[in-house]
Length: 513
View 1 (tube, rainbow, N blue to C red):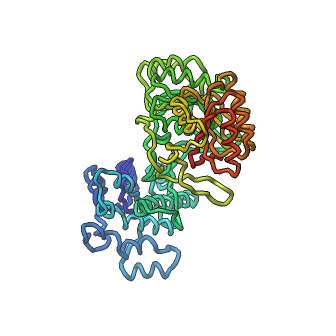
View 2: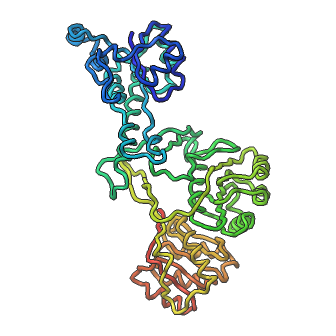
View 3: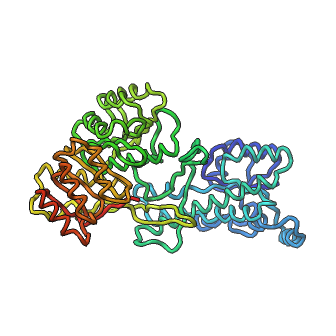
C-alpha cells in the first residue's frame, strides 16, 4: 500500500504516519511535511521518486504528473486501467492525506500583496484531493486529522468499509469547496453588486442542545469570510454559565447589534429579539439601572449587552436580577467574580472593543426562504439621516434633539411596525411587530405610562395617517422623528403643529421584518 502525505495542519501527523509505517504502508511526501516526518524518524520517500521528475517552478509543479494521478485515478476493477499502469510502470497510490492551508489566514496577514496571495493558492493539493475523492472506492482520502484514528483502526482490522470511504470523500470535496470559496471571495474584493454565482463557506463551531424549540436540532456555524465583524459571537469566549442555546445566540446577536451604534456607554436588555431596555449614560451602572427601568418585568430571563467592559458597580447591579446571559467587550476581575456566582448565567466576552459602525456595513444579510436565499446589504445608518429636516413649525429643543437621535437609533433595532418612546437617552416604551402603526404607538404609551409625558417618539417608517401622531401627542409626546414619504405627510405635520410638537423627517426608513 502506498500513501502520499502532504498537510498544512500537522496535528496528529507524526503518530498517524508512525501507525501507517507499522502497517507497512510506503509513505511519500513533499516540502514541510516530508521534513517533519524525517525529523521524527518516520520512513518517507520524495514524491519525485514516484514521478522520476524533480520539482520545478519553485515548487509550483511537483505532484501534477501522470505517475501520481494515474496511480490515484486508476479503477482497480478495470483490467484495461491496470494494464495501462503496468505498461507505463506506474504503481497505484492507495491513500492521499492532504489538507490545505486556510487561504484567509494568508491574506489576513499585514501587508499581504496580490502576488503573495496568488503564491499561496494550492493547485496540486486540491487536484490530488479531488482525484482521490472521485476514486474513493479504491483510494482513501483523508483531509481531517480527526479521522486519523478511525482510518488506522480500519486498516489494522484489514478492511476499510464503503461507509467510511464515502464519508471521507464527502469531507474531501467539502474541504476543497471551502478553500475555493475563500479564494473566489478574495478575488471578488470590493466589487459592487451581487455575483451571478456565489458559495458560502461555513465551519461548525458547536452543536446546540436544540433549536428554537426542543424538537428541533441545531448547530452554530462560523462563516469563513474576509468581511466578518471584529466584535461578534463567533470569535467570542464564554467565561461562565451553561452552554449557549439557539435562542441565546439569536438574542445575544440582537443585543450586541443594539449597543454598537451608540458612542456613550450603553446597555441593552433583549427579550425575544427586541430591546425591552436600552440606555446610554456616561456611567455604565446608571445606564444599566435606567435600561432595567424600561421594563423590569420583561427583563427577567433576558439577555444583557454592553458596549463597555463590565465594571464592579455594573456587575453588582446586574447581579440583583435573573438573566440568561450577558455579552460585553470584557469584564473586570471583580465583576467576573460576582457574575460567576450565578452558575447558569452565560457570560460572553468579545475580547475586543465595540465601536459604532461607520457607513455601509461590508457584509451581506442572508435570509432563508423556501428553496433559496434572499441577499441584501445590511441595514445601516447614513450621514443624511442625522441631518434631518424639520417639517413642523416648532424646532426641537437641544434636549429633544438629543433624545430624538437616541430614539432613531433605537427604533432601527425593533421589529416593524416599530415605535419607541425615549427620554434622557433611555428607552421608556416600545411597540413592535404590529400590523398597525397606531397600535404600536398605543403599546409604547401603555408601556411607558406616566413617563411618556415629555418624551420623544421614533418611528421606523412614515405614519400613513395622522391618528398615530395625535395619539402620541395626547399621551404626552413632545417631538417625533420619522422618515416621511407618506401621501398623507401633510396631515401628520398639521397634527404635530396642532399640538405644538416638533417633527423631523430623516428621508430614510429602517424596516426590520
